[in-house]
Length: 344
Image 1 (cartoon, rainbow, N blue to C red):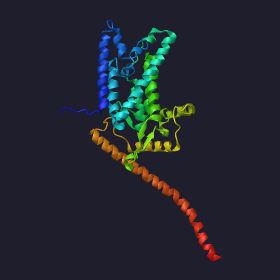
Image 2: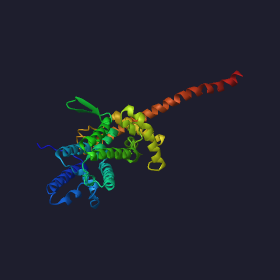
Image 3: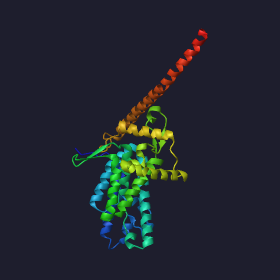
C-alpha cells in the first residue's frame, strides 16, 4: 500500500522549488567555466545581482550541498506543514515572504557596502543563498506557538524545550562565522530571527481564541505577551542586561511611529492567548495534524471553542469574586440605615 504524504499546498510548492532551484544551481555550477552568468540568476552575488532582483526570493531556495539541502527540506516539510495548518496558507505565505526577502535584501546591502568600501573581490563575489533565515524564523514562530514543547535528540539523551531553540540556533551560526568562515549564515540567522520576531510581535494580525465561541470576528494585532518579549529568548542572567536596551529601542520605535504602543487590554489578551496555548497545546510538531486538513480545522475550532469557554468562565468567576467583598461591605450600611429610625 503506497504511503500518502499529506502536505498543504504552499509547503508542497516550496519543497518543489527548493529541489528545482538547487538542481538548476548545481547544473549551472558544473558549467561555470563556460557560462558564469547562470549562478547570479538564482543566488545573490553583490557585484552582479542588481540585474536579477528576483534572487531576493530564489536565493533562499538554493542549497549548494547535500547536507544543507537535507536540513532545508526537513525544515520545510515539518515546519512548513505545521505553520501553514496553524495559520492558513495566506498567512503563512506572508510570513515566508517577509522572513526571506527582508533578510536577503539586508544581507545583500551589507556585502554590497562592504565591497564598495573595501573593494574586496572576495566580498563582491560572495554567494548569499540558503534557508538559514527561514529556519531561524520558523524557530521563532514555534517559540510563540509551543514554547514548552520538548524535543528529544539522540534517543532522548538530550531534551530541549522549543523556546530555547532560537537562541541556540543564532549562537551556533554566530560561532560558525569566525570559525568556519560562514559569515553569510551569521547575518542571515540574526536577520531572520529579528525580522520574524518584529513581524510576529508588532504586525501580524491573528484571530483571538474566543472568536469561534462568540461568533464575532475578533482579532489581535501582534503579540504583546510577556513571554514573547525579546529578552525572553535568552537566559535569565542575560535578560537583566537586555531589558533596558530593548525598552529604549521600543520607545524609539514608538517615537518614530514605526509601531503602536501596546495597550493594557492588548497585553492582557496576549497573555491570555499565550496561557491558552500552553494549557490547551497545539497539534504535534512531528505529525502536523495528521488526519486530514478538514479534520484538523474542525479539531482546532473545537479546541478554540473550549478554551474560549474556559476563559469566559474564569472571567465570570473573577468578576463574581470581586463583587462579593463589595456587597459584604455595603450590607451593614444598609442595615444601619433601616434600623436607626426605629431606635430613635
